[in-house]
Image 1 (cartoon, rainbow over the protein chains, first blue to last red):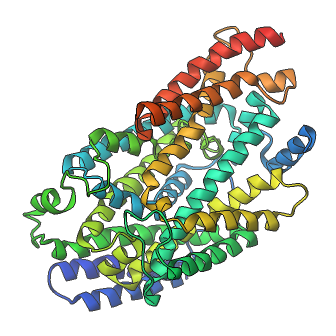
Image 2 (image 1 turned 90 degrees about the horizontal axis):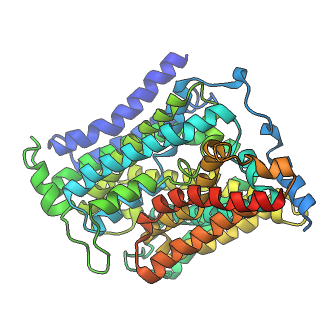
Image 3 (image 1 turned 120 degrees about the vertical axis):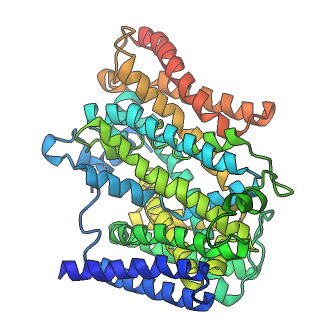
Length: 60
Length: 457
């Protein structure tokens, strides 16, 4: 299950970094870029919260 | 409030880590890499990169100066802070208390708490520049020092109220969210910069990147009303942006859990991803935007995700900062509960956030923050390495059961006064004062300890 969540989170990060590259290359519009990045943010936070950050930082 | 009561309250706040960390509690390198990466991709990064552009740094200043400054910061953590941390294995509070005594530590805590409030205030304002976008709030500009509109005031109070509420509820609830947010925020910085390339006229093969960088981003000429920066400003600001943590020794609290001093090099992740890359990215964003407000700048680049990142970045920096301020003030408050003190701290923070100067002059504030606290780092360094070499007692306050080590106190006050005089009268900029303050603190503390310890016997 953790592995699946990590893959979903990875998809979220890819949806964060790939759209601007595609926009820069002229493949997608600015509006589509913005929409995909917002989707990426939702996907990231909705999945990463379940597997990232469970280990306390030194001292906590 | 009586000294004994202050001392007892302070001790109880930090009771859980009174003893040196034992070997079983030591942590692996991965933890430190993650911690440093997370801590240094923050709301401040949006502002600092923008302000470098406004202050007219050139491409060389930014790329080379940033590289040198960050290397020096990493070396400070690894060679100065970490070796002491892994030997004494105490938090900053207990280390300082043994040297300086309860009263001086109390003063240090209060001043640190005030600085925390102002830093949190800057981050509340940063978040507000994004929250206000859907409401068409008139945002402050680079030259604004006072609140720019009623809408701004309302937005800042709303953001301040939310952040204060979460700080009252307990920092621990947010710590995990901050860890989750950090990797995403880094990607957003890079993504938003790439998204700005077309607006700046950068070709898809990047063939004219450096030409655009020179002519449209880091042009080497300050915006009217801003002081002109040189490579030395970039180097020294970058080096001492976290002065309180490395040479100021606040990261003793973190690095005492390191298995070996070399873990201090883990700070490189924070410096090069968080500071170097993020500051360059936010400079690119700013050059492509037509606003001075971080929220609007990010929104123009990548829409809601950008605005969201500014809100999250400001919030995740402000919340723990405000929480720590509340803890520190609690010691000074006569029997108040933590939530009341945190509420008061939140009010101070929010009132400070109303003034855009806190954001637009963030570079000066960060430099001042480091300057105020760095002399005590010099005291700790001198106490650890030099006291016995000069035939003096280390941990003097503990050994002699005194509440105020005057050698340490005078070192701090004299150097602060001297530094502020150099700034206000001679005109030396704040960015260049932490280094001499730290070096002189070492010498002055030894000298004053010679006199003081002889006097006390």
